[in-house]
Length: 59
Image 1 (cartoon, helix red, strand yellow):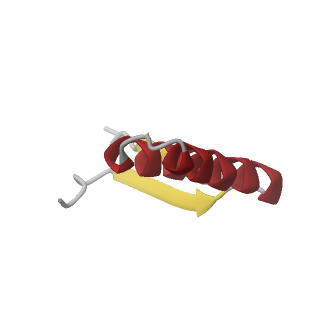
Image 2 (image 1 turned 135 degrees about the vertical axis):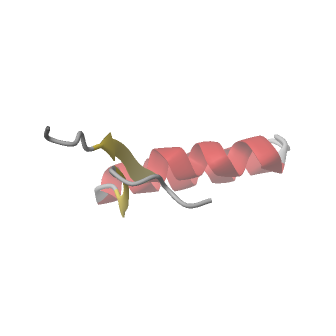
């Protein structure tokens, strides 16, 4: 998938304490036998800072 022109997607790791909480939460979910299809994306959303921005064209 290729983003449209004028759309930027920034993905960067969060600060260390939040990253540890997300990794620990993902590990706990897997240990509690939660489905992998749910546990891993939720842990990644906690650990990573994802920003989607749309730039408007000036007319």
